[in-house]
Image 1 (tube, rainbow, N blue to C red):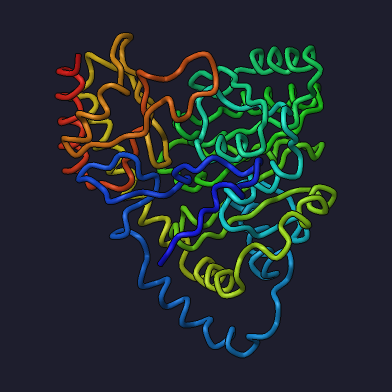
Image 2 (tube, helix red, strand yellow; image 1 turned 90 degrees about the vertical axis):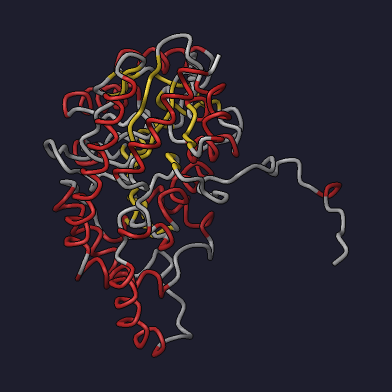
Length: 396
């Protein structure tokens, strides 16, 4: 097929071609970049059964367009589950179904951010969100964090700096539970302090709570939305991570006022009725047992990762000890460059997410990396970390 040249027609505001978040080529033996469970531990047969159970229902009304905010029973279920699991209070008409939480974040960004607007994030933050913020040419400003989360005094200083530049920050983006990539969980005290700063400075918070149910030890900590009574916390979550990545169903919890701004952006895009029906059927009949089994596997793999790091890296690095989630964050001694080590590591079948991919502040992250433990079994985790240690020790 002949190829017409579209390069001269490319819009000036079109994003630069690059690998989109979530796209991966053929995987090597030790892919510590996969931030979701491997297919062998996903409930494939249960999903098939749920699909079969709803197929007849869909076939009865194939010509009916779905509700513009998404399948009402699923929105009602989300409200009930968030009340039970995340201490949240919201209404079904404050819920918008989206294609994963990433689309929800993208919609909020498109609704609120103009080129040059300030958005505040952690000093290392999820690359998918950085992609959306860069897509809309946001002025991204990173705030230093410690093991308890974003530091309130640093947050206030960054807001003051933005305001002195004549820019009122549009929102603060946070992943307070099992932060991606640093894997810490913001303490209850710190959450209240951050909300207090945001309320005082009148800057909304966009809370990304997508993997909060992957907790396998430690105490439950309420969502930030549940701790705020002023309406400044916007909340996103997803079923994509906790059921299967291919389901691509998430949600946005926001005020009616904000949803009125988001809905024209959404247009006809969004969740299919069949997908929403399937997730609703699976969630109401099978989700709790699935999460119980999945968290047992993730805990075992987390333990294997921590044990392997202790065996092979105790003299070279420190790392986070997550109470849940899908990854840990390793910080090498000064002088060890994980960017330089990434090519020889790949030749050994080991790939990892470079800290530079997540960096937003003064620290470029060349000696840091995210290591996902959710995709490999315990034996492969040990072998992969062993190989990585050998590469790091022999790379100039």
